[in-house]
Amino acid sequence: MTKTIVFIAEKINLSKILAETPPAFPYQIDNFKYILNLLTLIPAYQKNEEDTEYIPLNAVRLQRVIRHYSLYLSYLLDNGIIETDGKVIPNLKSRGFRIAEQYQSPVKVSFITDSRLNRKLSRKHFTIQDNGLEHLSKWFNSGLQIDYEAAMQFNENQLLNTDCDVFSWEQFRKYNVNLFNIEHFTRENYRFKQDDTSKRVHTNLTSLSRGLRKFITYQKNGLVNVDLKCSQPFFLSILLCADFYSDNPLYQLNLTAIEQYSPKELRSTKQLQNGIIERVTNWYKMLHSILTHF
Image (cartoon, rainbow, N blue to C red; front, side, top):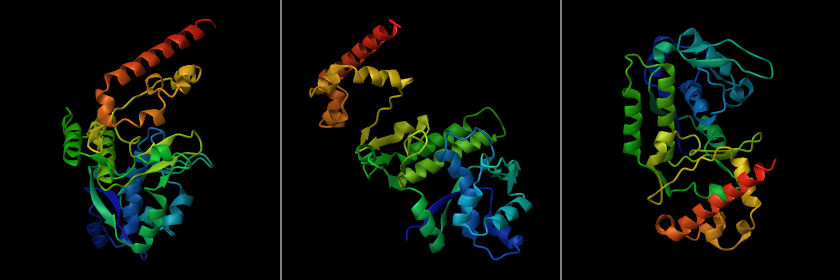
């Protein structure tokens, strides 16, 4: 079975701490690794969480993975490895935790070796749950790559190129989240899931910071990032335009029609590019005309 990769703050020498201060209960070191890893994993994949240093850990979900999770949390708290905000709001907020300030540092790669825990985690993380979105999820395959060396160097430079002598928690958090995503891209641990609330799709790409996206390629071709602000009127204007339903790819942004072109052809086919730009411009003019009449 594949070992699950986890990330532990490099200042935490877990083996040494456990040897010097043995827990008063039977334990598995991998359970400690899992809890510490969550404090990096959750900020990486739940960008809609409140901007706080303390990461809420849901007790019910935690118990599904570690039966006696409270013993592990208490040990980490009693030994000053993690800290808590102690705030609980029933049905709204779980108690939050963070790595203690003295241990906050860039993370190091480790692995879960316990086979039972690995089986549980393999069902929870890095799965493709497309639910009818196969036209999007199909791109998450071995063709999607990251320039590991360049991305790692960029991330290192982002941390070191600061004027301060002491790094803040937020600086460490950004560095660690980036490292987390780089490592999973390299190992092709892809994640694709649509949440039940906003229907947003969460993937390795959506959790990747803007600075790292330039190191991503698909079948050795560079990717392009398009950010549409206030996209609802934009898409409405497209749906109201008869040309959108045309079979001519020059007059639409229909993915099925454009997919017949390779990335190289899309970049070099000026006629296609100009046609799309012209159509988008016309759609915006039409939308502006509609809105000015209200």
